[in-house]
Amino acid sequence: MAKGNNGAVGTYILIVLILGVITYVEFAIVEYPQAWLGQTWTMVLLAALSVVKFLLVVLFFMHLKGDDRMYSGFFSSGMVIALATFIAMTAMFILPRAMNYGEARERAAALEGHAGEHGEVHVPEDVAALIETDGASRPLAERADAPPPLDRSVTIEPPLAAGDEPAYEVTGAAEQAAAPSEPAGADAPAEAEDAAAAQRPETEAPGLQAEPEAAEAEESAGEDAAAAAQPVEWDRDMGAQVYNANCVGCHQGAGQGIPGAFPPLAGHAAEVHAEGGREYLVQVLLFGLQGPIQVEGMSYNGLMPAWAHLSDDQIANVLNHVIVEFGDEPAGFVPYTAADVAGHRGDGLSPAAVLEVRDQLGLN
Amino acid sequence: MSAHVAHPTDVPRVDGAPDQPGTRGMMTRLGWRSTRLPDVKLLMWVFLASDCMMFGALIGTYLAYHNRSLVPPFPVDVFDIPLTTVSSFVLLVSSFLMVLALHALRIDDIPKFRLWTFGVALFGSIFLGFQVYEFVHFVNAGLSIHHNLFGTTFFVLTGTHGIHVAVGVLWLLGFLIQSYVRPTSSKDAVYLEIAGLYWHFVDIVWIVIFTVVYLVEFV
Image 1: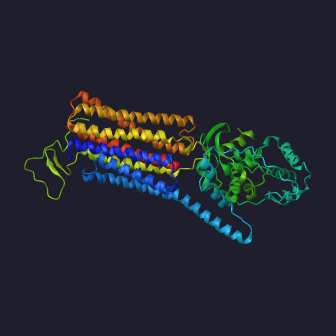
Image 2: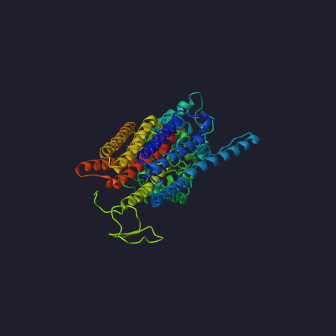
Image 3: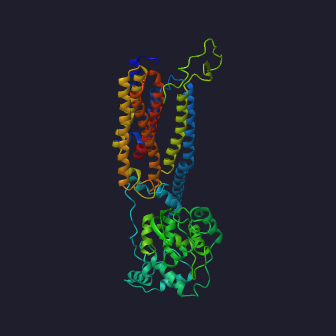
């Protein structure tokens, strides 16, 4: 000890007092936010205080100050590698999100400026989604208040009134022609919904805003062979490519899954589709699925992530791929189109709500 | 942890062996040594450097998955800053007692060395108690290690830190018990010193976790 006994202890007492004060300041900054400091400077200040504490402990409690430099050298090399790892991870995972967000805002601002001239705002869906969620998995407002995500699975929008154009094109020209010929009148919306429910009593799924239209589309497609005579083309190459890029890791090359870990798609997807799960399958891809499920007698309790970042085309084609390519093509299967997917983007379900849809389909 | 393993401070140099100019080494009765540093202490610093990398990776992983959980509870739902601040104070005080214990052993003040070492182990145990309370509270709030990304990364990170604290407590208690079994003096200070280095390292890791994981969440 270079210092006398009392001197060394005195230093320790001084250091621990400083450390205590800094810790309290950190606590106070967070617990009683200072408006004048601003968010960025609060972050900077917290980081700086943390570094000061770190250095005080290392230099004085661990005696690196005044000790042999070889110790500092070894420790610093470890710190440098740790920091490099940290920076690399930040660059790979955190910065891209932040940059995406910034870019989305710029694009939106440019579009708004453009709209000022032409009186019409059209923000592409992917941009709107990015703005809404701040580039993260949850919308901004939810992150601010931090309530659990609202369960919106029972929200049923009023069906389209007669004469209204459907929000999107369902499958082909035949249905478009059929839609306006539905009975019109004050009670038409309720009737249409009742009719749809009656036609498919087991497949009633909440949260499907466009259900009457979709049900009707399926009905007419199934009944009217002439209307369905011309098969809807879909992009088999894109389906296979999307599957191999995103799904194959868990659900495996032939859709056989991994028993106990990831459910099989081969056969199962077609079965779900046949039992009225056409919209449900779209929702699983858009919003994910979480919770206990039963597939072919085996229990699974995992998390299917949401794939909403894929385009409508990609999701439609990969669904077709999964249903058609992993077994015999189901009779009367009408391939998904981008419009089928687009119609569900606004459903706003949570992975748990999708599970409820599954339960209501009687698939568990 | 024998007090009789030779290290350079114990081993006198061979009489008349000259220092080699331009080197840091010295000749001892055990042969030429390239440094004059105690091996155990150098080894501890190397270990701490490697531990830095592990915690760097764990904290980086926590941040990479930050805000990506799909289902609640989220960090802001469960974190309790006043509670965590108190447990941070506890760990700081234990670090302070650690240097007092080492200082007491160096000046052969054995009663104080025992008192402060016991104090370190006690405060470390209190910190662990806070952590156990926090973990139980989180699990009751529905956050388990496999519940969502936050739970996974949080429990792996703070759990690894908690295991470090527990190892440190056991190490210091062992040191304390040993001092009753066989005579302990300032000659053993280097062994208490490396235990102390480990303990302070656990403290600085918590300093980083407290800021990066807990405080920044509420800014």
